[in-house]
Image (cartoon, rainbow, N blue to C red; front, side, top):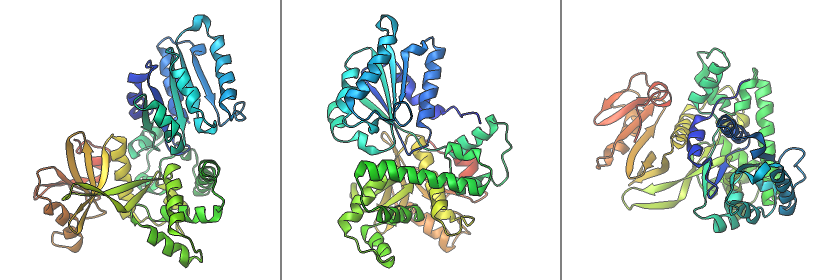
Length: 412
């Protein structure tokens, strides 16, 4: 299957291709396409006339570099490749899954200081952006978070491979998500096996190994809880009660630690609440948005049944993130706004629902009332599966697929 050109990410990286002062860091859940984007950067550089010997690519998760675990080992590998380059030309260093090398930060920074090496690194968890790397490289790196394919990208992938887009493709995407490789499988059994192997790899390499977790069954239960409750409010107490019901007694501190490991491994993103009146961030009761919709299917007792509400909210979340917006959950008195969307000094409010229903119905009032309560002049939107959009008392109603996912009716 042909690979989709991930233009969203390439456009963010292009201004830094030849910037040896700035390390380019690609993060994201495993199998989201980070290595593919690295390959596409190399392809673009080759087309610009850069020789292959100047493009140094080392995948530390694959042979023959899988045994490279220490900085001095990695240094020998890199220097051997640099020595091949004639006349010490400017070169490009691509390091895939850099977190496999312990204490890599000092080494990477030393190559950055050489002044003739443009460095790109990838990692599948947040540990590589903590501690020493942050201390040494503040202001000297950019992070680009790579997500699985959006709905538009998924359609584009089928098109470039000359495949028809089925009528139920949106439901297919809600169920099976956007992991690029999953589109190579044409039956549910194969997709489930692939997703199961993905979670197992994340658990093994990005949680148990990196965080040194000993209680694997408990960690798996916490993952199952987060995966089964996408876009729903989470608290330590709710997970503790879930575990107690399953016969597992656990301290709140342990649950918080395990949740942080889940977020660090990119299985899900944590989204905090923001008090719109008090203008302060709130640290209690947040939501978790799965990095891919398929994780919900993986833990579902009935994969063929779709829980539209939280899935639609999750797809809107990822679409907004992919477009470069900053998000929080809005709290206004006792009501909640699904998304407070920011870009620079611009701001908007978004509510997401399956169907609004008739004017005056409970669903209609529940969705529109929180937006009406906010008296400022920032734009307000309701995104739903309703067949008609339009303007509702100054609130813009957008059709999820045609206006938002495939259209351009939302922008700041």
